[in-house]
Image (tube, rainbow, N blue to C red):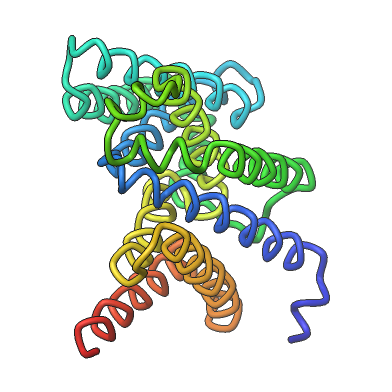
Length: 265
């Protein structure tokens, strides 16, 4: 409890809760739209963006965020045009981002430690600037979902019907993948590039598995995500463990308990 008096712990908890809420809410729609692998593809592409940003000496989150946002919209465009399957596009992005990072890492030894720090993340060392970013993404997420909840619900189950109802499906799809990109980027600080996608998928999967409605799935997903994040951070502080790994392990434990409980009743 004494550690909670420190500013860096307070910032970490607040940033973790905000990122958890954003990720869990977006994650529900990612799963419903069969885009769960999108988070993994974008987070690994961001690895290449971070490596390039560090090499160029520019702000990593902003630079990699712009690149990742552009790639996410390119994937959506290819998927919509049916030029390349969505899974194929993601596989290319997944491997391309890692390959870019490996090539850039081989060019210089001086910045390897800076780049590798993004692989595993640490929510306890977020800066005030990164906390502001997390807050901004959370507010954007809430506003987007509130304004487009019914449209996203219909699109998740039947895009053709959504078009008939007059919903601008193409525009909304691009806005959604852009939002998912932002959420993935801020998640990197909390759990790292390797685990960023799990931050969105695991709580959402638990919520969908148990709840009987979309609203229930969103509420349960957010609840599991926030409790897992806070518990994971406190566990990491007490046992001197990596925060990102601790958070995801608690999420997996929560998912297992929820699914077992569901089957028992």
